[in-house]
Image (cartoon, rainbow, N blue to C red):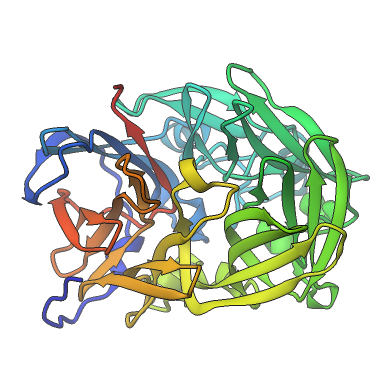
Length: 473
């Protein structure tokens, strides 16, 4: 653990626009990057926060920028950034506005444009949430049917990729089925008869295939889901919407949803092999952005996630609030739910009472299987995410990394090839508020000791997710 002397700093730079791209440049490295670590950490960030001159209402609506830290096997680090060439970005350059319906900043001022946006493909392609691989293609994702392909080496944007169906709210967190060689996600189909659709995109396919459909009257807002080899679980939490409000409610997408805690939470267990709803398991009302992992155990599904008591975190991420210094408690409680495969009520277990967000695990080895370690960004003392945490879910113990005046983002686990689950490193982009610049932090994933850091030429706005593209062997 590293600790510096106290300084009077804040995460203000995390919510400032970064409107200029960075050409590739070598960075000065403190410490030693492991010699086996070769590849590129690519993160996507809501970077342009005043498209056309006016601030977006919600931080989730900043225009997407790709940031890349390339680590050479010899220990060197270079950095570059480019805006994702979405139609939303091109509209701002050409017309001074995105002209698309977004998460929390509705540009459709008239009823006609709002209906057009809902029932055509005018939903945003501003893919600022996540990056992942679809087969051999790297894509940036948001919560609409469109993903955008990109080259992780050059950051050049490519073609738009169909990820779900028209008028659908899609997950930006697909799960990988390494056995079937396919990527699995879901779409929320809004219509007179709405439905949750489980979708699978086989490697090399041009479009996803529907593998299961569950009717729903008032669809829930869902951000992620969980999966094993046999089952998928959708979290039907009580933040729900009447689909007609999306067209005629006169609000941005998320503002049409209502919190109805009396409904509780339903875990919808889908049998992936049969394509049917296998069971419904009920629990108390809660809100969740991110699941951690799920595995089968003696007739139950064991589901770990980061949970909030209600969805106020969405409202607290309005840009004006953040820029006024009203920072949210941006971590959920690490919870475990045991879901009987026969249906009924979930059993909740304590995992040490830790709070974290942006969780990552050794996914290649343990995704959908029993596991021991989860890594995340946490909130120890400051007004925002100010530390990284590793929790041992077998006994609830934890270790942390923290440095005064520093605000880390998602910790991406990169395995070294060793036999232990935690043999590898964590990569996190950290804001040093006193220096008004960000740096790439490299930690030993076993004990969170610092191995190296490489300072970027500027402060990088807070981003959500990224992934590591390994150099070809």
